[in-house]
Image (cartoon, rainbow, N blue to C red; front, side, top):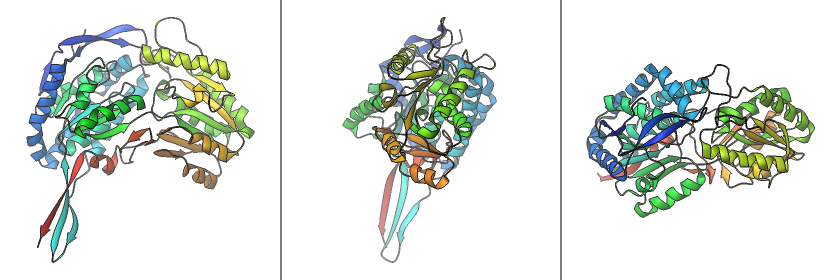
Length: 467
């Protein structure tokens, strides 16, 4: 098997333990990954702390050049990284290739920002300037659904601001991130980025560590709540991108032939394992049956299988725990609604579930109220737009949402009333590094991307000078 190593203080080192990484398409052991001990986590934090003063003192242009070099190397190794990503994560190879390319694009764009000094006052009595200074060591906790791209959400801005990092990938998808570590080991000064892996047993130590100034986390709301509690003892800065249960509202007068493909794509990308995926669709009664049937036909036409096989459009669930959890949602869907397509768990190895369209469910049903994070889409009938907006806003989550319809004025009015960080009109899952991204309510804290995201990795320092 290929050898993988942790990155600690500029050196690629073995873990004090190892752990198996399973290919979700065949349930075979893909590789033995290193598993860090608590002592190795402490060493990584210490290395980042030691590297911080020199890194923060570098001119921002020097930091920018090194960050851009990482994107160049990732692009040069894109083919191999994409294949490894598909093997450990499960997504179809075209989606993995897109993730690698988007990773390069995000790094390049985010590395282009600056931290200019802002002059607040300059008059005969005083000069007041605002600086943005780095925080110190940033702990970045990465989920298993986009294990490469989400590194690119955090790393370029943290480093550009002058921070150093300890990155902890998910235990079921550490391999491609460790490959990124090999690239960074060659390009960055020792200790600037450190990568440690665990079996979900080091998160509490990282988030409570007294030498970690900030945690940037992407994952579930339940884990985000634990991180907030853990970080309280040291008043850590936090950016939390948490769970979502995005609603799509299909207005009266919408064309089913136009909206169904967009809704299907927004719901089933990465087998539905996307925080911003459509997870409940509210469709007006006048077009309900046609939209349901068109969605069902798209589900029947989807090709489910190993992501490395040509033509596959939906891969497996990423890990056994999620696979078993989504099956409980299937059971709820059968009890509460009408399954129009899918709902099958194919025999044989692999964590596969066929894409499932569930009709005739309602608010209050588990399949509607809870985030499935899998290839299941409940479709809810409504006859009053006000009621649909109330339903969309009726949960504690508010990450994203979308409104679909031919009447642009009505669509805009509805979109402005959706309580979420991002709302799309006649599309879904369209975002970029230049657009601030964050969740409302229990879907997150803080912002990623753009200048607002860069600011999250800094401390404001005001220098107020008498004339």
